[in-house]
Image (cartoon, rainbow, N blue to C red; front, side, top):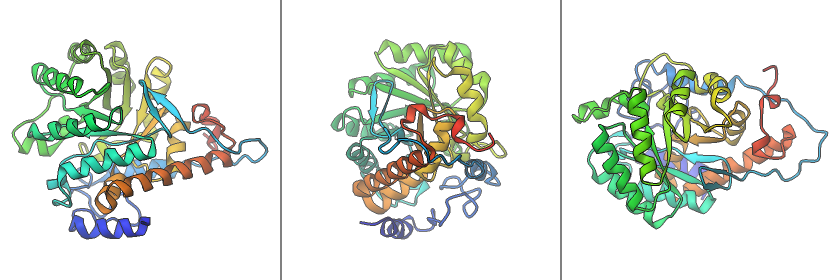
Length: 342
């Protein structure tokens, strides 16, 4: 199986909901939410891609780096490369039933496991979505991290308990999903949380012995609030540009957030990552691990488990080559010194 074959098949199965463009930058699918596009004008989606594209490396060739170390550990989970597959659900309405939801999630997690990565798992309406995801998590221990929507406290903790019973060690909350149109259309909107609410969510997760990730942060104040609430990791994210028009790319805001909390909690990021080269750029800006969403959706729809594993290995190979060309021996040593004129 080759990447071109995967992309061609995904384009056919997605039936126009995703055109599998040569460059996935949100221009063709602007405003297509539900769908794979960005909110409104789509500029937030495009800003993610453009912010990364604007970064350039310092090529360094006088060194001894031959076989860079890509492996890392985040919140007790082991990664062959610092890449997590983003928690994307709703294949029925976002990708026009390109494949059954459970088959999609199985392909993502099994492919991640084969490549030594970890995958995010979705929570949605109805409850059956999370139940199916947790069934997959049971069969692939330590390879799936459920991301629960910011529901009211009792509903949130009930789902955390489900995750704990399924053997999960880490659970996330995609706080940025408060802006999702699909949840409102289904009559189950999610709501913003204040500092006291955040502490309550964090306590609920820790009571069940799990580590806690908050996803969707774009300003330093929110990152610090999560740190003070006892959250174990954050994901700098604008939800792929799908929840608010006219926001910066995540690569633009990552350095400030990472500087504010790094060393005291894990820092992750997503948004516009289209290659292993982009992964190294995000690591250089301060991330410990990088989430990749839409490309792995294409991989799963077009190639199932094998497609996901192939994409993962391709990203890892590109990351390794970029590290050699910049003289970076270990992903944990990546920093701003890798970037030109930064």
